[in-house]
Length: 413
Image 1 (cartoon, helix red, strand yellow):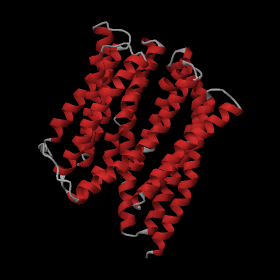
Image 2 (cartoon, helix red, strand yellow):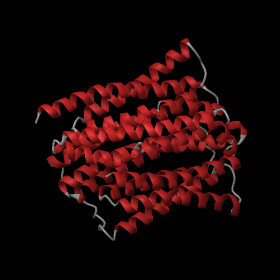
Image 3 (cartoon, one colour):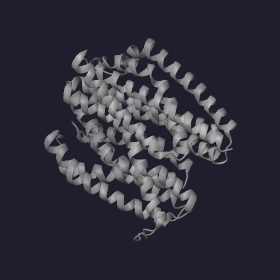
Image 4 (tube, one colour):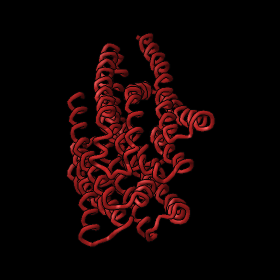
């Protein structure tokens, strides 16, 4: 498990380097307002299609238990179609007429279809546990985005937001086609069938919905910051967060937090099922050491070098993002440990408690922000303080829930 954990981090680091290169290149070629609008539009699309991402863990668990790919995939296809139609009907008009995204309607339609395609095939290979293919996609997708953006901007001389959307659309479609053909070597394509809604199917749908809401609640925390900044602060301050702070923070999460759910959660599920308490405790000690090392390095680099790094990589107008990153770095340790706590809670079967903890995080974010904004300071840092406060509150509540579940596990021996 630890070997897979660290190899996943290495591959993700390469993907992040490519993805960040795209953002750096775009920040030098596309004006700040246009670039901010593009990233915000992609965020809204992703948020709308979040139900597809949330299905992933329930698909993995259901397939490992039932081996019924036909039932699982056909139910998932129904939710996929519904999500695409909702985005088409509501999100695209919002982006065109409310946010003012100046691009042809069919670009936005193609964006919905291409992003949903990648999410669909990513869930399929996760369900089949095709880890090698997953690692290939981690590198291939940002590489293709860089290629298509450079082609559209330099070769076809497109400007504004068009080369950004073309890069997203073309890279997503190509990744989908690659996964479709690559996975056929191991697993055939499942035919379209109307699923039978028996007890197993109903349980799968229920777990998928809970998993979607729980996973989505964690993602919504970052998007909530975006919406608060859109409403209360300038486009310049939103750009600091969208173009620099959020990508860097998201990359840290991808590198050091997501592997906990990818590798540690299945291991915890097996250990808890076998009631191997000592192994569970040893795994937690390893996570604590891991969290301390990663967070310490993040804090030191942020405090000493973040301003210089951003000055070197980005245009001068993004310099204020350094202060946001410094605030986030101090609380990153709580995010890592809380991810382990939530994994332990879900591995124990307490999915609803995990969901309630995530929802508490969103409520805490809003409450802390409005208290700071209305009574103390109207600085943009108030949003960042609210975000890290929500992580701290979730950590504290999860700590209590984890201890109770561990005590129940010990008593069951």
